[in-house]
Amino acid sequence: MSDNVHDSLKTRSSNFVTISLALDESTDTKDTAQPAVFIRDVTADFQVCEEFLQLVPLRGITTGQNICDAVLQCVGQHSLDISRLVYVTTDGAPAMFGEKKGAASLLVRHCEAVGYTHPINIMHCIIHQESLCAKSANLVDVMSVVVKVVKSSPTALTTVSSRY
Image (tube, rainbow, N blue to C red):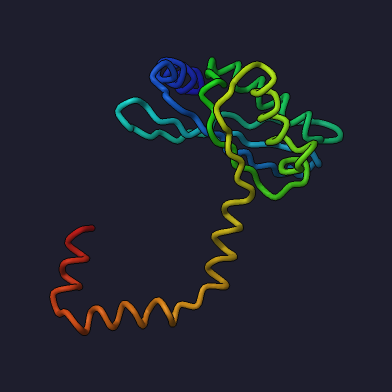
């Protein structure tokens, strides 16, 4: 099955216009760092595909450079064109998001060093940011607007629900 998924991704990768990577590091029960690499790609006809790419076990001390090297090796093993990278999302691990020595920053610098000139965006800890927004959002303000709109127009609710 693994070979089938790998071959399928390799075949589809020639159609990718852009790719983004999501990196999430966790540690197993034996204190082995396990960065997980996910890929999201977009084709010319705007088809979006998300896939788990690889779990990369790293032994010993895990630095941003170790993770960056592992990600580059993973990308190479899957025959992905790193020049199409436009976005990197990381978790909250210090080795991932450090401005100078974090894996995401090192990955961007690697791309710049080999001549890729387009900007590569870095997003830190998107899951945690959504959680923080949900905790700090004042839903009373949102709901008061929704209730006001629904009360003012009885067809507003059916119009909105029919769109979805």
